[in-house]
Amino acid sequence: AKSWHFNKRPKNMIESDTFVLKELPIPPLKDGEFLFKTIYLSLDATNRVWLSDWDIYMEPVHIGDPMRGFVFGQIIESRNPNFPVGRYAAGLHTWSDHIITNGDSFDLFPVLDGLDLAETFAILSVAGPTAHVGLHEIGGLKENETVVVSGAAGAVGTIVGQIAKIRGCRVIGIAGSDEKCAMIVNEFGYDAAINYKTEDVTEALGKLCPDGIDLCFENVGGDILDASLTHMKDFGRVVICGLISSYNSSEPVPGPYMFRNLIMRRLTVRGFVILDHADIMPDVLKELASWVANGKLKMPTHIVDGLEAAPNALNLLYTGGNTGKLLVKI
Ligand code: NDP
Image (cartoon, rainbow, N blue to C red):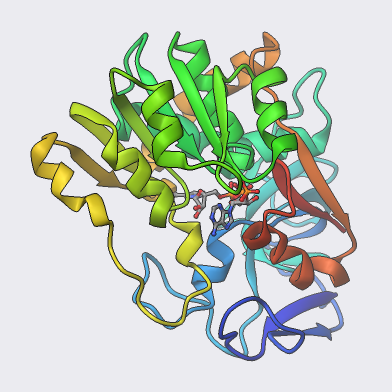
């Protein structure tokens, strides 16, 4: 089996020596184990965080370890009755083409009518649950609110916008190109979009949200978070889902300039990590699957070919080279 191992801590972006590819023989299965053939590897913004020397929300990936990632695939041999041969499964494991596991961090995965495997995995594995839990559990989303989401054309972002529209909200997305802005408005139902590379986001939000923002779903941080903080309504809520603009920094980054609005606008700011919400996941997945079935929820996928391509492809998340969910087809 081939798998990528963490070799050298990067200073900024992933470099050619950050990982090394190793090939090891696949040992015979023990009782309780199964052999999983990876079909898709999910590349997630947080992968870069796991490689840092920060004090983070879970065990980091240590130098020498196999690289960790969310994988989707098929069970091809099994000595575990809960994971029969032929079934699809997904779990948090390693960047490998074949995996032997007892299934601890794996779940069987449904095949949804009318959706291909990539889109099913893209919606149900991380992005869909993160968007759903972030909006409802953390953000307390209500009907008819004004919602602003950054990283709006990415995996989490496209789902946030669609769910907020399902809830009858007015949704403004912030993204990094005219093509992405056109896509989220025309294909994903956003009411408006701001290209942060060509527009003054603070000024644009002021025009688009004259009565203020009820809920800011933050995926980026930095100046973009400041722009939203400037225009929050009194008692507005800010969901800190991600701060991708700082994930490649080896140095600490400055906090928001408009921090004072936490007092002036009496804001609630709450961060969260989706892994803490396993208890409500069955209901969340059921609702996401029902929206998919009704044609209300979809996800663009950006698929890169081959395990070998994974390290370079990860950088696409930090340059904006991906639209929608970034996957590697193994
Ligand atoms: P995306 O598919 O959204 O890809 C990342 C996008 O972020 C890029 O395409 C790029 O789009 C944008 N971006 C990157 N760098 C910058 C920058 N410096 N300034 C502005 N925009 C930038 O990735 P994910 O869906 O995997 O992740 C989105 C966010 O959600 C991340 O912050 C991630 O950490 C967070 N997340 C949090 C979870 C949680 O449990 N809290 C779980 C899963 C994800 P553009 O072209 O628009 O610049």
